[in-house]
Image (cartoon, rainbow, N blue to C red; front, side, top):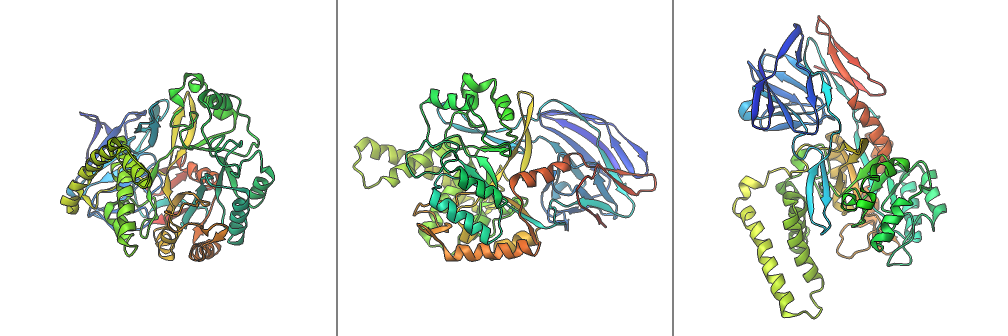
Amino acid sequence: MVQSINLISGKDKQVCSFRKEHVHKITIDTLVIDEKPLTLQIIFDTNIKHIRNHDYTWVEVKKTHAVNWHSPKIIKLENGQIIQANQQTGIWEIDKAQSHILLWHFNPRYSKPLAQYDSNNSKRIVDANSGVSEQATLALLLVKDYAMELSRSKIPFSAITCFTDHCDFDTLNNLIQQREFFKKHHIKLTKGFFLTHYSKHSETASFNQHIEEYKKWLEDGHELAYHALSQSIKPLSDSLQDFQNFNPPLKSIKTYIDHGFQPYNLSQYYNYEQIKSDYAKKLKEAGIYTLWNYVDSGTAVRGVINQLNPNQFTLRTFTKGLENLGWKTEVSMFIKNTIFHYFNNDYSLRLYRYVARYLKTFKRKKSISKHLFFLVNGLKLLRLFIPIGLFWRNRKNNVYPLAKYAPVIFNHELSGKTFTVFQTLEMIDFKLGLCPNNIDLLIKEHGLFIAHTYFSAPMNYHQGKLFGKVGEIDAQVEKNFSYLSQKIKSQAIWNPTLTELIGYLKQFESVKFDCDAEGNLIVLNQDDLITRKVR
């Protein structure tokens, strides 16, 4: 059945020993797993015919398939034998061109992506630190009658919608309107807030000024998340002192969401010696266990909604989702999406920002040097897009690098303390992103999204906002949320807060499968997880 198992680490390859404990169980040597990429290459004497997909269906191996920890690790060989991993850890990958080979990855590039900014605000993507080395005893279970898959949802095998909202434009008035709107439609979210009032705008909402309103959000079943300690950037010494003196107002707040270029962001803190060594300790003392730092899998439009489906995060799918919006909107959204998700590097982001800043202030008087600066950077930006146009057929279906392995949530260790980092789906346009077809698609695929939203965004250039006009909920957006509400009520969708979702999914880390000598599957450490048989 299994011809060989090779341990691949960088360019080095060596045989990894394995043994049959009995006819139904193949045990692989105990591996030491740390933050370095490691891959097992498992070679079968027959082809892998089907793989259990992220949508809980059998799909034929006709392309490259990647299976993360939150999806079933179950395959079916040409001879009909079903094989299941003994645990959810790592990522399985199968390529149609070599369908007799199963790759079992641990910590491959971009499987746990984090954004980092240096002191000049230059961005780079790094991979999370997995923490101390751990030993993993892996096995392939050749089950007799059935395998077992786990539900990602508390509602058995339903879709999942989780909203996290950035409070950049919140005022007391629109906070009240938002809360009443979500109460009307019975939708829960993780609501970001600024702890103290320090802003260019006097009306900006903050916890210390509007504590009674935020308590009403908690009473309605939402949860709160820090979105920095203040909106605007204070003098550096003041910002660092704010973090050092940080005292949580409530014990229930477990999440911190990066905002702007605050020096105490996860993406920035290591640039400042004053807080660097005690950063993790301070977060834990404040009761913070969950972090987000500017990592999206993509942007929601028609047909782009499920973070578990990498094939939705391509240039072709995004372009198709923009049809009939008008060429100006389509071009501007395509350019931004390509820069932020297809390229996703500091060079392209800087060029884009230079050009966008110039065009935004186009009517203002400018020097010749600024015109030339725009021209040079505009040509450099154009140069990035020329190969996409010339080789569209080959590039249109390339999955964005940060969406390939559908990370969703993962662990990151700082100074010996473990945090959970979550990846989001940017959702700005609620007419496109939450249209009924998208909601139906999410249900059909038993999918999941953790939305990165700005519910109070007032900018005219944002399409599909919650507030079509100041103080007025957009009618079409309300229809979409009403449709979503119906699906939540009918239990086709689970709508947890972020902490509820992470608490449930984290159980996947401890569940184990085993197989007795007769080939009967056994589930260990199941806790509250819901399972069902797969034949």
